[in-house]
Length: 75
Image (cartoon, rainbow, N blue to C red):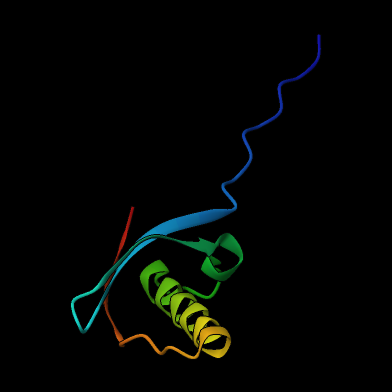
């Protein structure tokens, strides 16, 4: 009999993002690579930084800047 494979770790986490202007961006994906807790940092802080980087990349491509992130919540 063959051994069952252990379930794979999810490769990303989903977050809802609320911006200071009141807009909501639902189901934003953040790669698990950015959420590595080896250094004792909080997942929320790491996700916030990763989402800010994503927003900056979107700005570079589209030319439209988003408002600052007010809060995030894991989905």
